[in-house]
Image (tube, rainbow, N blue to C red; front, side):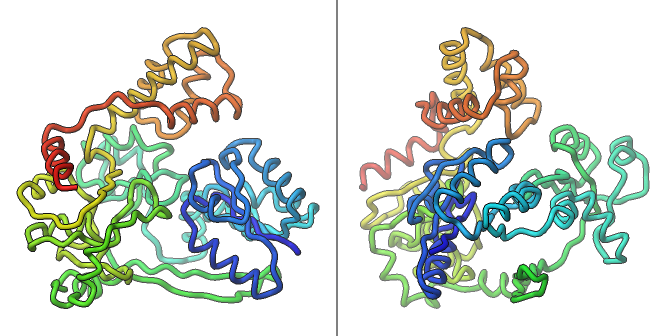
Length: 409
């Protein structure tokens, strides 16, 4: 029976289970998952999981093709934007192996993934869109636009590297740090996303729209605890971490019962707001916001009942993230010295990090030192970075809170 392969599967356990149910409804088959990280939740939930090179590696497509041939895969389902152009260019190679790639062709992806091409396409087709601005002229202080403006990388997804800029000095600062930056008008409004599933014959098979309007947001923010009385007893259960969510956005599904003394912490650590529609969600009146260090100070003196574990994994919450990065580069320097007999890797990597380089710092640092930067070497160093025991310290205002919690556990 032909099988399905989800690529860059990451935390997409719910998607994998949906494919498993769909495949079972048409007679069976297995649902496989591939990811660049061995800790990805979906590859452990899949019928079989595979660790493969990153999608920007030249070894990525050959690795997927080998899996498809060996495991009788009939359908490859990519799940992240960066791999779409890669797999689109390789569609014919997959087709020769009897595999359908659920991705648009190269021409469509060139328009969709490159924001400069997207803007040009909209302009050519007469589709209203935020106007692309002259970044060089803006940085030089020439007129022709008004703040605020949106600065974003030409390639990328998930709003990574996107900045709403409100003054000239801020623009000059971020323009030096965003890779291949584009400048656009900033337009406020309600965001709507239209999802269209197009079959191999080019016909639209299904569409769905999603949008979160201000009215819904305000309604959720106005909700008070009495409206959630039915779900409050669930808050006394031992929390379970959502392991299928990104590491930096994990949440606890239920708030440990408090005497209404932690409203901010309730919204930020206890649960997602009811807007998300998850069982056990308690809206704390401040919306879906990340935990900040100042909120930890609110926990001092609060009464917490039946709390067994709290998992924090948020940048710059418990410790300075920069310290972790520097510690990782130091560990890599020891490894590079052991393998290649070369020094200064840590200093070079840190210099790149300080210069605003994000992504592939290890490759760039190896290249600067004249060392091989093949996929195996980079992958080995990435694993070393992830496994190293960091040399970091807690923020001063965090340590008392952690001691306080430890006495109550």
